Length: 282
Image (cartoon, rainbow, N blue to C red; front, side, top):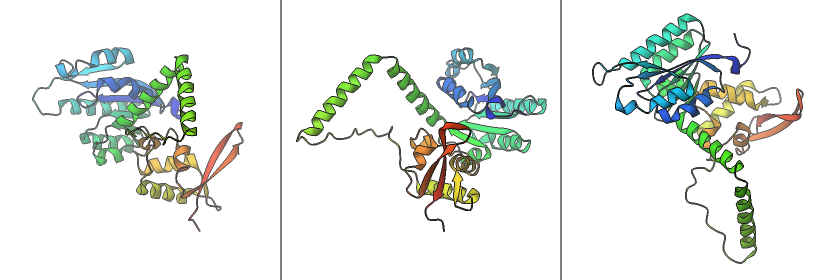
């Protein structure tokens, strides 16, 4: 058994009828955070013109195509083939986990069966994915969140590659500073606030509070990473990025309910570990 997540051998099974080829590269990068993809397959009728975009994505990411002809319209031949392969892989004993890339609730029982056999199951699909499938996975990641993260990283890389961007930023900052000193009213914020962090919903705050309570020490404190892990176990689709935050610590610091304590990390003198406490706890 692998000693850490990056060594976890994963079988990546993609529902080509359900997923989009343009998301593959970002999806594979996300999956690499949880383990090492050793089996990578996409299923579907790749002769269909609607799936013609898959070919370059398969070549670029080393994914094996599994051709499944649509013998009859509106039937789930692709789903059945994917389930059969998953069970064959399970009994082959060459992986410790699966990444199921689909938004189809038909795979709910497959996810449950794989977990019953001790497999780590990661689901990746859109926000409309039925809850039954989402909660059957150990971790469920929204493809919209992956797209957004990939887009932000690409934007950062592009900015870093162009020194002129820094010059423009300094110029803009100087203009903003000058405008602030004038009597003119401040500029209105951009109408599109999609990139701005969102307020964490109340039911998520309560979920975090309950997770904290479950593992808190006598002083009411718990390691933030442990609170995050337990929260994901309770709600597999929980992800700080869903609310516009790059990491869990930045999210937790915006919630007034929690007291944050940054302590020295014994293993890394220059780093810190974060503990949190519920201010309302008795």
